[in-house]
Length: 113
Image (cartoon, rainbow, N blue to C red; front, top):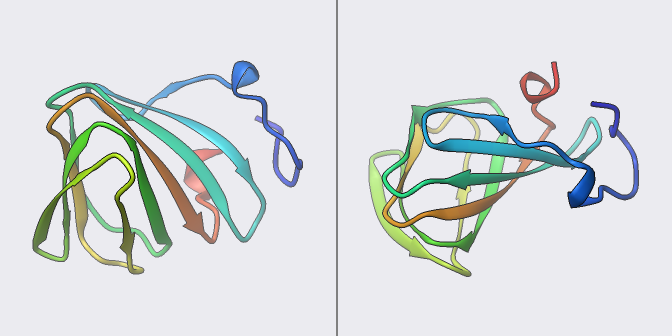
């Protein structure tokens, strides 16, 4: 993957990679300060509870998700968004098949190593 700092990322040229059972992701654009990632979930797929030092903002592009952040769960649908503070425990359950658009700051080095 050699897109760091590039101004454009063409979806047709990007590859999906596995990100858990029923989950896949595409790393879109990024530099050292910010990264955008599309994450696709099959219905019923679970993004297990986890933490990371990055701040995360996410948009529900498609589908319905139960999103849990620091013990609070909300059902979100297309057009809804959420913010995950640094080191907050969070996870997702896809009630319907769908897609999240995640933005991280700083970028997730573990997604490109």
